[in-house]
Image (cartoon, rainbow, N blue to C red; front, side, top):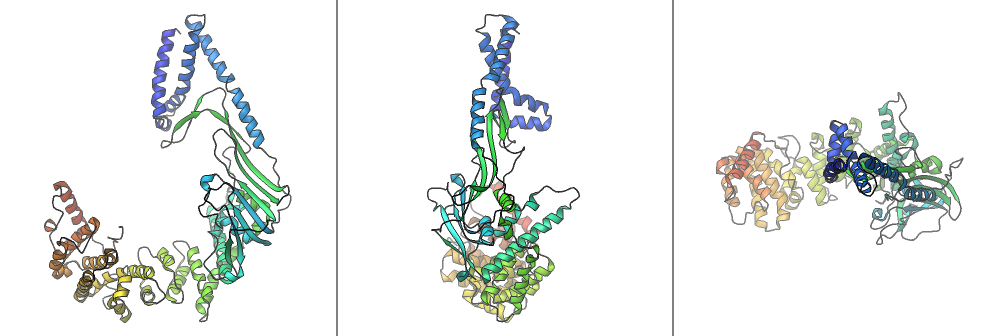
Length: 590
């Protein structure tokens, strides 16, 4: 090949290389569609570099035409193998220096006394405020013989207190302090991490994992409620055992080390497990390609030196469960039902302590989002027992869309319960608003008390909309509540839940609220609109007025609105009128 042809190839490959380098997702698309085009685009930057080097070397050789090109290409290929070697040797030396001999004990290491966990994570993994008692900390505290655990973030951020000491304190039993998600330790059990065996039913492993998670939750909930609470301090006693966890720092051209070491403090390790990985510059030199469409990019080609097979995974908790007494912290599967039994016993016992009654919260937290019918029946019992307070979050988990009619009286009682705070009353009022249409056509005495009490009805504001079930008497009360709220002169943030509930009640009544339409129009037209201070809320009131009987074309839209925008808003209102659903939670998303 002559010099002209070589220059042409350099120009063509250079242009293609520039394009794929700036838009590497083209390579991914080519691989997905036809494979071969993707492979061609992938090697193009490497081909360009080798051709460019060939052209430059050819220019100084004392040869002509194709012999010059062939000689130059041979020299370039040879250099591609030779030049990376010094760096490859450096990378291999770095890898060898990071390696340490594996130590696997014949019998599990029995952890006892004070245990120090040194977590050598990169600085961005430091937790502001100091370490928390996580699943490992909880498992260590539950291990027979362990008296306390110190978690130290050795490589944490400078503003991190670096360490905290945790222990179980009998004097704090029944309190709210406890480990964070102790059940997460179950996901690291060897039996659940092993590959599935041929013929093994997949649901069996999933069911066992769920049962074990329930067992850990039961064990910890009962322990914290009845025997010991979690105590934490900044200072820590001398450690009997030290567990050191080194995390992969993901450095591109330095050793990446994941390592677990367990030792009696100040003595040689009893357990060491490692995963070491190191990039070594590839020979011959080339450009590699990584990522998918969203993160595709070219890299300098490398080979991976690793102490484990391809796609390795290192889990220090898995190694601890395999080779230490930490596994003793996992309770038997049979323990998964212990908490449920304890909750039933507390409900059945008139003199149950508050700590025993509070077991219900932990049990409800442990349930799946769609509990079994027998568990849901027990949830109903918990809600109905007014001795158990502060369960707003737990109740909301199970009743996102609708609630059964049998919870009507218990939720009303919870609103009236002096132990309920305003947030709870609001949540229970919203749940009551989801009961079937007509439920409150004949309100009970307790329900009437809530709606007549200015404080209670403001705190349980979502319940106000169900005055619509009472038809015209309900309309009169809705308008009276609205007038009282406007006249009160309180801040909009306080008024908004009540005014929103009135609006939703009027929308439920629809044409049945037509007599109130002139007053709503008058309020809405005021310069300082007392019904809405947000554009979204104003949109909801326009829809409500349309439900009450005002023609869509006559609704009070914003002056100066562009015709196409106005028509779009009108079309949206007409669609909502046709598809009206009183249960739709309009107005709760802002």
